Length: 222
Image 1 (cartoon, rainbow, N blue to C red):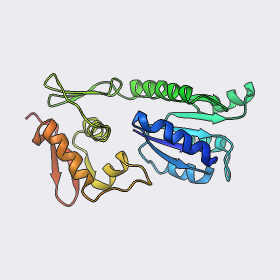
Image 2: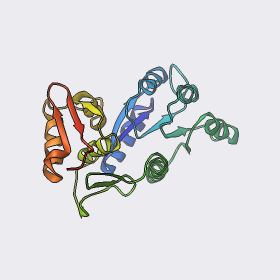
Image 3: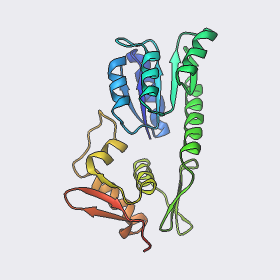
């Protein structure tokens, strides 16, 4: 799952990114308000945003307000040194889903992020099931014909997108943006490899290749 971290303190951003890596998140880091707002308005596929309020160029509160006005409902966890009650109320009223005061313990950040994502997943979707493949986004489990299937983080993310949008055509670039961070090197055949693994672990006809275009999951009966 992709997380956007907007934090202008390089050491803090690096520490958060390092702490979240074992949780199997793909963390992209931005350091100023205008760039963050452009990314959030651009429709990048994100699981959540960790947003500092004290940003250069454009205050994080303004970024949050503009993001919500634009219709983006991505879950947002606000980080801030502003610990006044009025500040917390203002952040929540602007559209924050949770609020964490600096300094904070990494364990609490992880716990709040997990809780935020659980709430978002429950609201966004229930268990997904197509052609005998069943995916539980909250429990992060997959089965095929009632037999458990072990997937890597990136395979799980791809399968969740396919199951959530049967019949939708995904280009390779779109799929790459779903599972890789902005600063990660992506091998030219990376998506082909992930799709191959999904077909092998589930069944070959689940995902169809559209030559020169991308991939689509057929939702018709096998």
